Image 1 (cartoon, rainbow over the protein chains, first blue to last red):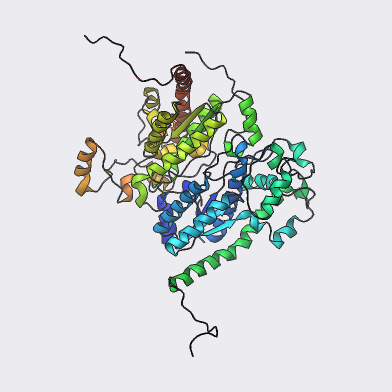
Image 2 (spheres, rainbow over the protein chains, first blue to last red):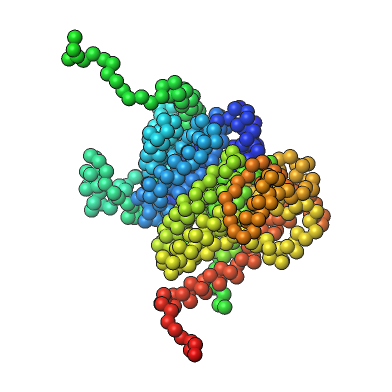
Amino acid sequence: MQNLITRRMDEMTSREVEQYFKNGGDLVLVPFGPASGHGGNTSLGIHSHMAHAFSLLMAEKADGLVYPPLYTCFSGATRAYRGSASFTITEQVNILKRITGIYKAQGFRRVVLVAGTTPENIAAQTAVREYFDETEDPVWMVVFARLLEEPAIKEMIKGYPGHFGELVLDQAALKIIGRQRPIPYPGHARKLRAEGPDQPAEIHPDIVKMRTWGMVGFRHHDEENHSNHGNAGLTFKGMPDTDYAVKVFEKAANLALPALQGYSRYLQWLKKHPFRYITPTERMGSEAK
Amino acid sequence: MKRSTAKVQPLITRRMDEMTSREVELYFQAGGDLIFVPMGPVSGHGAFIPMGIHAHWAQAISLLLAGRANGLVYPPVYTCYSGATRSFRGACSFSIMEQTAILKQLVRMYKKQGFKRIVLVAGTTPENMAGQVAVREYFDETEDPIWMLVCEQLLEEPSIKAMYEGYSGNFGETLISQAALRILGRPRDVPYPDWARAPKNDDPDQPAEITDDIGHLRKWGTIGFRYFEEGQHGNHGTAGIKHKGRDDVELTVEILERCADLVLPALEHYRHYQAWLQKHPFAYIIPSEKLT
């Protein structure tokens, strides 16, 4: 593990990056997420903040560097919130593939695209699949929100007296990044509320039905369709929930670490197994005797 | 010219990614209409200067301006053309056309949302190249002007030059980066502080064998080029020197603040130009002067 003054690439000198390489470094994490509307309490950059915070923790644990957070992403259904800035999925794909191509060419063997959650992961999964098909060189996308589904994390947040969601995660992420800000409506943020549907009542059943078997274009129509339901400012296990959520980020980074080793092994394995067309290897009973 | 009477709203932050969508909406309802989009690539600058210097500079100026002119600041766009620095590891260069497309997309979205004034803020060159393409193309497509501000051009103002006149080192990006990071709340020590304090000559940015050739070609136009050694685009600046009894980084923070003060009236020029254009929609030019 190299002792670097910072792992944020934009704050490093090019000489520091070069020395990182000479000392065996090979990992860059690229956090991304759009500026997207989340109502009264959660910041527009929440997805990117989560990805950035997670990337910084991962970089510390796995001797990686962190590209500055990328906001030029698809924000999808939140485009009706002023302040949102949604790029098309295709635009985001091209940007991610461009960054990947550049850093692979420079010698970063492991490039990890880090999404906060959805919908920015849609473009990233396209970038990951296309880049591999074009080069046979895999990049990995990790979606921070999926780590929250791990039993070890679920166990950590079990019993939280509110809704442990993006609001408290945003607060924690901003703390890790070093940009903490107060919650705009702290009284509201502490109250427990039911999570309402994300669509107006008149069309909610239609949308749900279509989503059940596939996908349909949609957006949010009222502020509460995509916000104002999370909590923060509560005490949990004897500490402020934001501090507790910082521990959740740290735990998530610890959980993801072995997957980085798996990524290294996969890279090595693929080198020994270059592309070839698949030929029959198994007798299926109808071959000529 | 009529000065704006719009009040500066007391916002908890002007960094859009740290604001809630409700705060942005309330900003609009209270009369806000201005957004800054700072930009600059991740690009190699050798031993003293962080790779994000151009974006740091642009973001620092954007934040200072936003505080004075009641604007908001989009998070820095790093997906920019870094040009000749692509041979520094860590640099990440997008094509000029890719950067142009990204800037135009941001402009379109925020214009549609009601931001009347959009200011693209470049630290310096080469990110200004795509900035100027975006500015010209967007205007020709819409007749609605956006403004690109290039921070480096402000350093040429006489009142700014007077502030660092007589500085015993090389007043350049090493100091600017230190000051910008301080404004952004992310200060870091200069690597190799003794070396950074030592005065240095500004060497040519190309190998000796081709310096004259490149020099001649540049004189009358543009030619593709890149860097071959670290010293061609780094290691010449100074920081950590006292100037007139003051810390030079502290002085540079003050210089950046002064730059923001200088820009303020130009924002009113921008507003006036927009209003004038609305009253003068596009028309083909017809003869109006007797030439006989």
